Image (cartoon, rainbow, N blue to C red; front, side, top):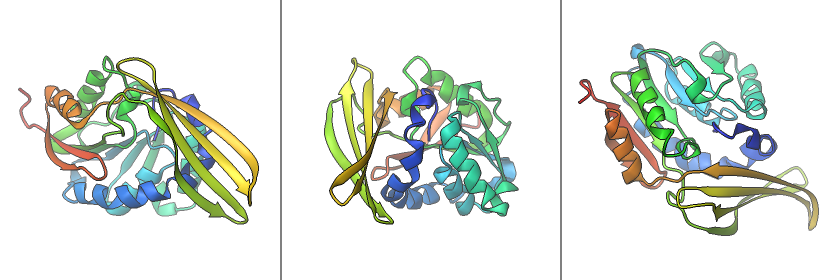
Length: 249
């Protein structure tokens, strides 16, 4: 689930799905609930920053009648996404993958929904108004957008911590994260992936991502300015659902 700064995801792509299992377990039921009344007759669903396709498949499985457009600029992430589609003929027939950044992509008209997981914080405060207005323009009247608040939602140092650990075959995989304050608006997230055989470190890979955190109140105000009204929020997963007002103020 990547957008600007997508080259930084080349290092992460190898480990992304393996490390994302706890995240998917938390987000998937909340996402399904927020998409439960989407009218797929209105048009396609756009997944912004589709990454390796985890979010895309969640949407496709929740709405089996929907056509989807997956927007993903990072080639390493997109390679995993395409492999996922290759393994499922039903998805290949329903999902169009666009290899560009969101603001460089021609959006379909009258979308039934837009989903942006792990994306909004990759745009700074000057770019986000255009992001919101582009989402609003793409949505059919009365259609909705689901946007994730990327934690921590504010500019603050985050000490390195292990956020997940898992196994594949005989090896142990650990994901570690830390955030460094760059200025009053931005953080540098440092993701470290370590691979062990017992206690022997076999591989260490680092990926860094510049992000501009925003809390739910700030995102809600920005969305409102574009004619998107907050209707539902899931505090546990950090997902917000907005509806496009039928008549923009």
